[in-house]
Length: 507
Image (tube, rainbow, N blue to C red; front, side, top):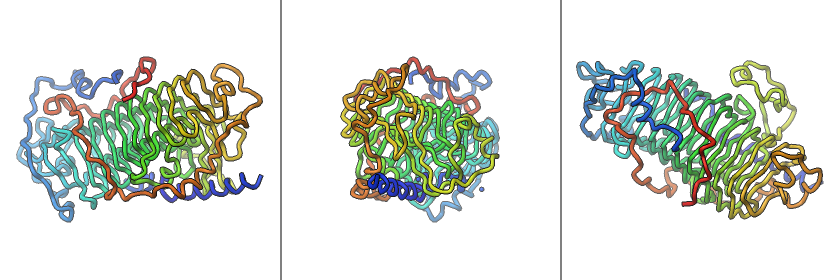
């Protein structure tokens, strides 16, 4: 979500507040020129097309630190040893001096294998089906020196995988996929970035797994403008961001599972809005996640993160999402909330119910209509089942609007463990397998318009390069990084057995 659009939404929310009293950096492609899931190494080992007898020569560790002012020259350095890549493996810096140089000479199916060291580069990838892998996740570090924009940007290149490395100090994103079919980010650490940590936009058939993100003002992880997305987020940790997860107009076989979202301003926040294509956000499945203490006051944060601060899982204008078997606790607002997203200057009108199933590519070709004013995207037909939610200061479970009749929204709640709801007795009012109650919806409601007033006194954003984001602890390495054959993102996402996922235990 762009910051300006979030400000616009906040302005519309202010108007809603008046009415009640009286009666999201750019996500677009402007940058473009758990146990159920097998590990990447296991997947690669099962690839019978690879030459599993071939041994990889491990590049020697190196210090390739480059001054930020010399980064362009470094990226252009394609000094290449004779025979580099003849075996399908391009060693950095042993055979090619820089990551960018290795990527530029790589062919589909090649592995760019990076020795430990610090690399001050902004790498652009335009070749399909290559794999970029660090030999040691904690010692292969791409450092933008707070001057370079994206650590690794994959622009229209299908099937690219990025594995087992760290990115930090970039003004925009750590790992960024845009306009691709097939992508994977595995065993990635990204921290202190000016926009997102791991960012997939207008891209499908993806997987983000075994990764750690922190210190981004927008979101640690983002998947947006895709339907069906056919993507999985599995076994990640996202903390000390504005939002742990953000997803605008994404969904359709989009799974967020077995992951931890903690110590962000807000936790998991999908939303709808016509400022990006493929609206609305719908059919995101959020299962088996640990979501707690998303009240952090000293992170970098876009406006909506400040507005949404103190919420665990917050569907803002989302439709037909499934939220099941998550453990959610310690939030200043709601544990799980279904709330509106208000858009002041929309590009189109609200999609009708028969348009909810239109795929993204088809919708892009459709004409738009002038709605003649702001839009209220309510959260509709969401299913909240079997979660354990506690220690929420406003409500453990909540449904709200800014003028709509929430009794008609067809959201349902069943089998959750909780103490408080808004409205009161929400599981009685809106059970998942019985009729909705006709009365009682006005008792104990939450006025989300009041959040805007409260946001004015909340701690402001801290610049990403000044925030007290903790240095990440050493993170788990990809198994057999030195020897596993290249496995491009041509058969993703991995299959998830949702039924096998249980409510996680508290830390």
